[in-house]
Every structure is written in C-alpha cells, then in structure tokens.
Image (cartoon, rainbow, N blue to C red; front, side, top):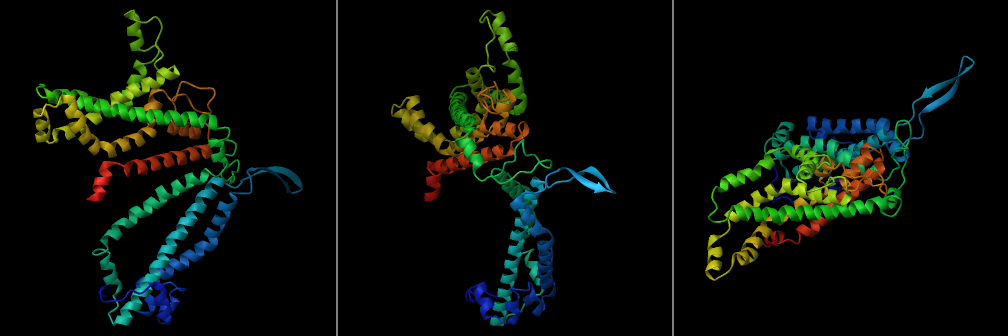
Length: 453
C-alpha cells in the first residue's frame, strides 16, 4: 500500500488531467479504470451502479422530478366516456400529490447517493493513478474487501444505520418541511384533491395573518409554561435534596425512596390519576365540600387560570424527584473541607448555600436545565393527558387555553387535517429550540470551562 507521508497530494482533477486514457474514461464510464487494471469485481460494481442509475433516471427519476414540481395535474373524479355509442360516467383515478412529493424527495436522495458512489469511483481512479505513478502493486478485490473488516470497519458498521437514517429520518423530515410550503389542508386532501406549492403563504398566515391570534397566545403560554416548569422543578428539587441530606437527619434512604416512588409509577398513570382527582366532581372537591371548606367546586381544570396553575403544580409532583436525585449526587460529592472552612469562619447555612453549594450545583446542572427547558417546550404528555389543551377558547383555531405549540400541532394534524399549518408550527418549534439551546449552552460556565480545557 502507499504510504501517505511519501506520496504527494494529488486531487481527483489532477489525476483526471494527468492520468492515462483509462483514468480519464472513468469520469464517463464508471469503473473503467478498475476494469482496465484488472480490478474486475470492483469495476463491475461501479459500472452496474451507473447502468442502474441511468435506467432509473429515465424511467423513474425524471417523472418523479416532474411530479414534485407540479404535484399533480389530474384530479380524481367522474368523466364522460362513449362506449359502444353510449355515453357513460366513468370514475378515473387522479394524481396523488402526497405520493408525488414523497417519490420526488426519494428521487433526490437517490441522486445524492449515486453522486457519492460516482465520487468514490473518481477517488478509486485517483488511487490507481497514484499506485501506478509510484510503481506500487494494485490491490485485488479481496485485499480491498478485507480493509472493510479492518482499517475501515467503522464505515462498514455505519452503512446500514446510515441507510436507515436516510429513509426513515431524513426523508420524513424533509417531507414535513416541504408541507409547510404547500396548501395541504382539509380542503386539499389527496387522493381526492390535489395540493400545490404556495411559497411562504402559510408562514404569513401563522405570524401575521388569520392564525396570528392563535399562534402568539399559544406561543406565549408555551414559553411561560416552560420557564415555570423548569424553574420550579429545579429549585424545589434542590431544596428537597438539601433537606434530605441535612446532617443529623435519620432514615435518609427511606425518605429518598419515598420521593422516588413517583418516578417508579409511569408518568401517564400519575397524570390520569391527577386528572380524576382535580376534576370538578373529583375526590378533592368532594372532600373539601364535605369538610365545609368550599360551597362550590373549585375549577382546577375547567377555569383557564386555575388550569394553568394546576398543570404547573402537577408537573412539580412529577419532575421534582428527578432534580432531587441529580442534586443529591452533586451535594454528596461537594468538597467538605471548603464547607467546613466556611462554617469555621462564621458563615451561616444560607451563606454556605449561596456562595458554595448553589454555584456548584448550578455549574453542573446548567446543561441539564437547558435540556429540561427544551423538553418542557415539547412536553406533550402533561398537557394532553391532564387537560387535553382545555378549557376551550372560542377565539383560538383548533387550540385550547392550555395548549402548547406541540399539542396544537397535534390537533392541527389529527383533528383538523391542516398538515401545512402543522408543518409550519413544527419548523417554528425547532427554530426556537435550536436557537435557544445554542445561545444558552455556549454562554454557560460549563461550556466555557470545557472550551478552555
């Protein structure tokens, strides 16, 4: 094999210019250089991939490109046909805009994959040029194949997951993004109807048009919810951890176990139980009424303001134990010498907490706080299982008073079949989450310390 330190850097372009006729022809006929240099199997694989691509390009890819541009021209319906002199109404199948969009995107990905294979063909030709110019032995297919199980084994393992990511992650993600630029809604449902490209119209409707009256209130509540849900879990989790780890407290393991039980119970079960307990006719209202503390049922989940406070409270019940466990691990590993020295110097427990304990906890937990905040922006379970987004609000389109952007997206998709608007909401959620994560994380002390190291 060639030792890279002894071989001058030669680009693919230079190899094609300076190489022999077989190297040059490999730019037009894939695998030609390999075939000419007796790498028969490798050359045939490149050649077959080119033939398959050309056949697919003519028969499948070109129609797919036309389909993704037009998204269909023939609608499904009845047409009049004359059969044996008799005019009859015959049902005809129309174009399916959804399938055309998917096949078009798949065709683009297929072309990108072939472009990578073509580039591998050119690199293979360049390597042959280098080997011949250095007088080195040209490896056989068996020797090349063995490198996939040795030096390039990581590439072999990555091949299958990469194909899965392309088909089941990249393709659906790009498809979802494309829907934001179409009019794919309840009035344009395929295969009965066609939908078409509309540019940034949907973004205009969400941000400044008829949907702005729903988007901005829901967006504001999403941010308020995310802040309060994150902050309350963080501070009360730390307080609980400090109380449990107080010197002199007996049965610490028992207290820890009691609070961790809420984690052992599946979240959806806890939320459904809380939903029943906080119902207008639920056990809590019934108990308060029997004790004579109330005359009317408290609207825990039926009043807009009460419902928001109830959601934040229930989320504390679910989330505080997680923060408590993390904070407990940090507190148990704090340098005891520093705390003892501060106490000897006369510092109060609050001063020790303010100057030593809390900064250490915050330093370590800041990335986790950012993760919790983004998770709360997309916290579907708590809202949907507790209130279902309610109580209803007649001023909102397909959204309730406690709906987050993510639950509104769900309703736009499942209930209203407005896939274009749901796609816009999904893009905006991603933009907000990504921008906040990047700005917040790069400004944390944890990140700066890691960068310095």
